[in-house]
Image (cartoon, rainbow, N blue to C red; front, side, top):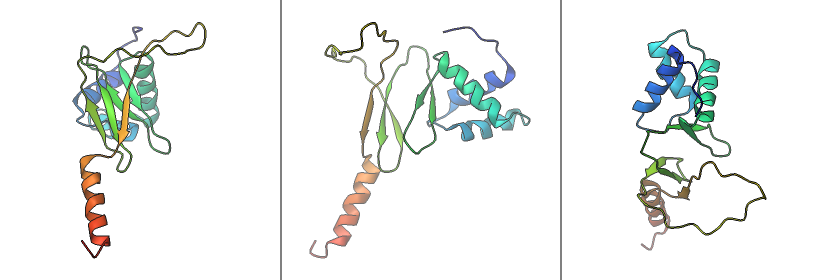
Length: 141
């Protein structure tokens, strides 16, 4: 992690991400930061987020066709994510110990700097909703 100058904009973005109860996108972060710093631009928030990601302070959660989401990396509290393919909800997944991973076949000289797991599926609310819709669609049940 490189040390970067701590600006009031950077401090505000970090505070917003640390207190977020979800995995917000840049527009939400911008709206929250503007409550503290009304003059901050969306571009400044994007550049700040990019810097924080590059420095390992924040991780991204990306889905094709959706806004990138951001998650603050609380020191000593690494976790993974589960993403609902139906509603897009993102859940933290705590894993105290990962079983040993089989050796990966990586290009020669590739240096791994981080490993992240994502679990993709359907959350309980969407699964219940799908079951309810299928029951209503079948008049024999």
